[in-house]
Every structure is written in structure tokens, then in C-alpha cells.
Length: 217
Image 1 (cartoon, rainbow, N blue to C red):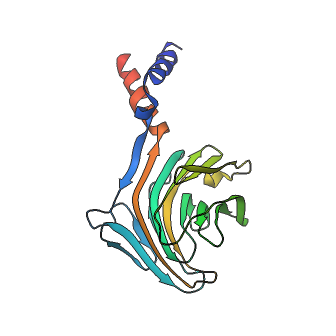
Image 2 (cartoon, rainbow, N blue to C red):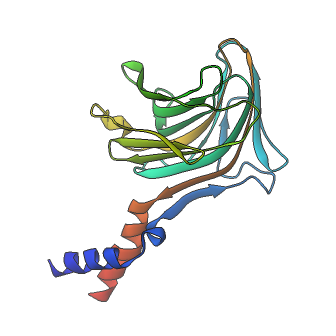
């Protein structure tokens, strides 16, 4: 009991800005993909940004990074798309058939969509109108905590959704950046930069729990 109280006290004493721990932080400035593994064609690093070009109806390619045990985290990145309207990131990726994704779709669709893919197929969980443009950089943040997903685009909070039917296989997983063509435009030309994944859960365990145990040795 005493150990638990001391742990809680230390957590409360630490500024929230110090609780976050970077799980991933990559800007491609060194000319490499770093922790990202291509799962498809078209990816290269150009002028300090991650670039992908694809052609065809519903042509999909992605790069994967992270660990299967990542649970609650915030993924943030900059993205600029040409061609197809899709600007997509997947999170809590277990495999090709189990994941969540956020798709910020530019004009004329002008919305942001939260989807879930699992054993039963693909389902749109939430959406909201949002005006973004092709050829412009946008900053996207997706915060995932337990069953809750919050989406921010260029500092604006689009929505928060709670998935009461979350499958067990989607409680944790890595991230994937996506290059997706389709719709009326059968090609995609997309850039990603400044990708970060941060977690408060890991930081609390590392900073507080292990430290407290050392105090009581």
C-alpha cells in the first residue's frame, strides 16, 4: 500500500509534459526510411520526406513501423497528397486484416473517417466534415487510449469516438502509413514527414515504478 501511494505521489508531482515517452521519432532527413518497412511498391525518401507513387484502381501500398505490444499512444505526422483524395494512417495494426485507420479525405469529399478492419470486415465507426486540400501539408494527430480515439487535423479536433465493440486483437499494435489510389483519380502521389509515436503508459512505468522499487530495495 505504501509503495502504491508513493508511486501515485510521484506521478502527480511530475509535469504531464515529462510523462510522455517517444516510441518513434523520424523525419527522414538522413535519407533513409529508418524504422519503417515497405509493404508494397513505390516508396522512397526524397528531399528529406517519405514519398510514394502508385497507379491503378484501389491500389494500396504501405510502410509499417512499431511493435505488436504498443497499446495506448499518440501518432502524429505531416502529410501532403496529390491525385487521390486519401491521406491515411493505420494504427493498432495486428496484421493485414486487423487494424484501425484514419483517412483524411480532401476536397471534394472533405471529411475525416475512422474505420476498423477485423474478422467481420471493414466498418466505418465515425466521420466528420473537414476541409483539406490536395497539394497542401496537413498535420494529423491520432490519440488512442483504451477504447477511445481522438483525431486532430491542423490543430482542430475533428471528433472523439469510443469503440464499445473493440475486438481483443485490436487492443495493441504497430502503425502503418498508407499510399492509396482509387475513386475518380486512379493514381496517388503522397508525402509523409515528421512521424512521432508517443506513449504516457510506458513513461509512467519507466520513470515511476522502476524508480520507486529502487527506493525500497
